[in-house]
Length: 266
Image (cartoon, rainbow, N blue to C red; front, top):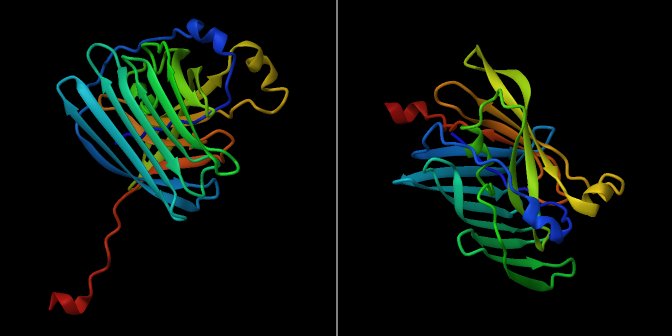
């Protein structure tokens, strides 16, 4: 079971986009078919949304879909299409965020091959805006597939650097620096098991990157926990889903069955 996330973050100097080449991660574990359930929690454990993640593979092409339905009626929906031929390579990406849980409702679509990026969003006053650009997108773009990528990252690697397209709402390329942060422990059914802890840091280049920590605009780190071994997979993550958003925790969820009425068994 894997999940994904796509935080929106502060922009940086667009003149530096050409310097964002990062690491392409070789495929070590082929993706396949998944249908899993997730919950989105506040730090105190309060559930704010329920989620479903599906994955389907057709040849070397894989489609991930992640949907969160919030208790207040808000919606977070991501679709990521990527190739797993030799390296993980994003092909298409679509993100929808709407409802009261999101400061600025957003609809962003990305076609990596053509470089076409379209963003539709609402301003503070509710006025609708649209942005359409042709961008030179790097081969290591990871929107919506960071946990998938972590299935193939060697935990002994000190740092892996990849790219992400952030909607601020203007689309901007930023770097993600992924570093191992040691092992933690979790339990299931009374048995303990190790979890691989990663820290994902958003690096803002140029003048904006220097100023961001000073003015309090540096995006918070995202933490991801994975199970390792011969079949690695996602366990949980903690971080924002949008620029300036709260820290939310994404966790795996188990189905809960209603208690059967004893009278119905007779």
